[in-house]
Image (cartoon, rainbow, N blue to C red):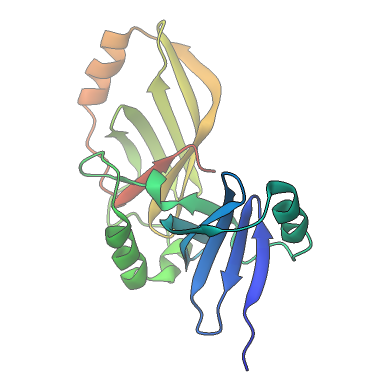
Amino acid sequence: MEIENRYHLDEYLIIEHPDARLEWVEHFGLGMQRSGTCYVNGNILFIGNWQNQDAGFLMLEYTEKLHKLPEWRKTRFICPIGSILDTATGKRANEKTIENFLKTFPVVFVKQTTHNGQEKGTFRLWGYRLTVNHEEDIRWEKYGGASRIYGGKGQIESGVLFLGPWSHQVRRQTRKKYFDELGQLPRWTGTKFWCKNRL
């Protein structure tokens, strides 16, 4: 009889079933737990939306059991599917769309230095200004109010553009000038999906 493997990852219990299916579980409320499906692609563990809610353990007991398990180390990043946005619409992508994308997306893309044929350069993405050199050298800027432009780093993993948290103030510039200049830039089309503050 094949045995499932269990791991802990932050507040999540990750279950790897014998048929390679992945499931997440987390504590919820008073003695309850929620669970759903996980998807691995490249360096990312995508956490699907919750699908089931059952009786579980109290928080202390859950945490004690969780941290006795080996840590999940099979991916470098974790990303809730609910935080992924569609590049074309700027709206949240639904789980089925993401699931289908991950099933058909080649993992080798992580090692490539192209963005769906889009050249290196400067682009606009829903209020963000992106300066792209390659998957691991992406810088973003965004108007943050009070004539301040903030910036941070980004990265492409498994076909998704991830924008990290802001790390510094880039410069001072009026809102009008920032958005006037942004509007002159070509749209980012190098990835179908993007996600902010997840690195």
